[in-house]
View: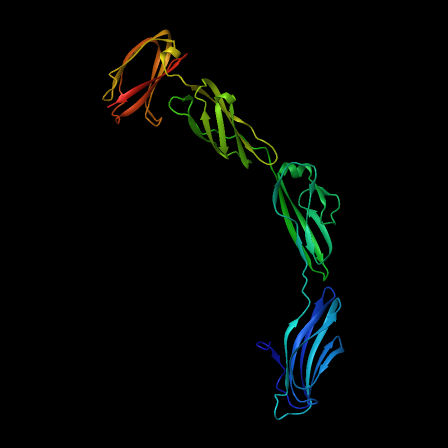
Length: 373
């Protein structure tokens, strides 16, 4: 106490020092403060007056003392008064007040709610909040209706125009006890069905002898907040996903077509599914691919280029692809329809390693190992 106390003015005998405070009280409470006096009994007097009525009176010399008085709701005038009647030789002839504690100030507030995305529903439950108010009123910049616009938890029914526009703003107006008006807006956006998005993966054939898993990425679907991936049939493998990314663990015993599905989601509904079909094969030998009558690769191992000689039971277009050890395409050749092929394959200068030659006809697929020294 006393570090930042208010001291009475430097006055002479028969003068007074006054502090006046007008204050609005919003609910029954109390006013308290500390007082201290340095005057002889009868030489000075401290008075505390509330709304013209004396509530306390003190005289003489005493140290810090806390006093408290109840106050009712409404406007009040508080007066602290020090009167000096005579001078003292040994004392300061003054008074101090400190740590005045007043009832909490109550302000009018209003909150319509967070801006948010909503589904296309016939009714929306509102949850406004307000403090120290006499009345509330909801209004809309759209053309819908309220069940009761004069309550905080009103229900709003969007109009067809609201839904067509895709968003609308609701306003909460709060009138305070002292005539103060506060407004707050809440904008609601109606979520539409997520649009279709691409599967950003160009591979059409999966050779499980080369890889047992594939990492996928999907494009962004407008209006989507999450994504769903699927793989069918289930016997082709399993798929795990995290948003726009997914990983497929292929079943190495499966051979045939597999369909990957990708769709955007939001809290209201699932969007259009994009599908991509790939061919999955575990072929490793001619015994599994009896469309071939003859297949020879030489020299193997090779310094880079090699010869390919093959004969088919039926004429077919042929696709030749050479993959490196991590599955990257390092050479490709398309052959028009033929039943017999003898050609020199020239993939260019290749680092030493083990490569896979993928031979695809209209009926069969075959994988052969090529070693580059």
